[in-house]
Length: 58
Image 1: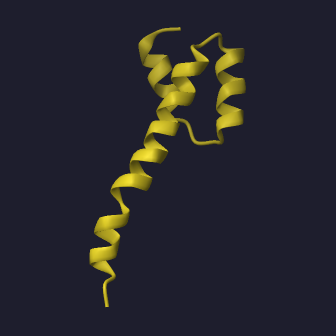
Image 2 (image 1 turned 90 degrees about the vertical axis):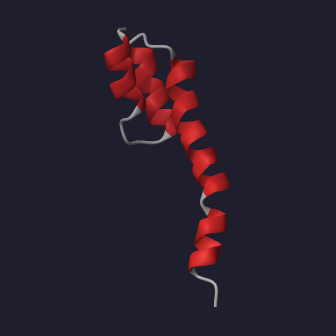
């Protein structure tokens, strides 16, 4: 699978289970496809709380 199609595959909405099934069906690198959404989730969980606390401080 080419890098352009792989990039599109990691950006599709859906759960991790659905994305892994699609990756396996398309013979894509399932580890890469699942690593990107996990990285995105953890980065949002680590980066966003401080700005939100400052924004909604009473």
